[in-house]
Image (tube, rainbow, N blue to C red):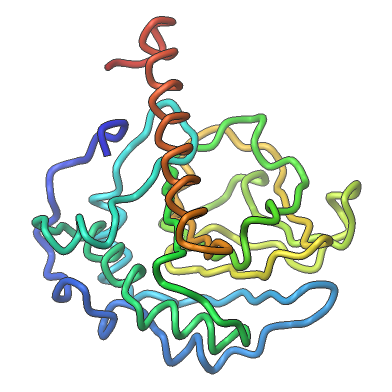
Length: 238
């Protein structure tokens, strides 16, 4: 991910690559019963083991310009040397993870239609109420922040498009917290403004694999342009 800079690799023990055992709590996910109104959704704590959260957060790449950045593909993860962060990505992109989400939400999901993006920082304009695009079928957000005291940056699942206070749930973006919901015409969500670090990995199961590839490319181009713009404005480095 050329737009990101990573810290020195963690030295804490991490589970083997491309394995969900010991990394993801898929049994816990399968045991969840998503709420159905006003749109299918769930909030789960402890989706990843504490040691996984610590090492993934340590190795989480920083994107000083903000914005979503595409994660390495499953094929790239299989070829490369993995640290705590990329080992978590390898587990999240494993086919058995897609199957667990499919079973939980009663959907037929394709692991090749999974788009994974990451973000390390939030800017004040983020969080406006919206629904996801019709090209997305299911969205999951996995947070990696050890503490959270700020009033902003707490995802709210909402009943309407124009009232941030009319919420189903407010989610602290803490280590291992998972939020997942089906895309519907009324799957409104957003959060109050926050400026600063807010780490998460976003999984989007798209309508098909081709759409996932195109949207991943689009996010990569957008991230590159932001990085270039910040370099010219003096806000960041190339």
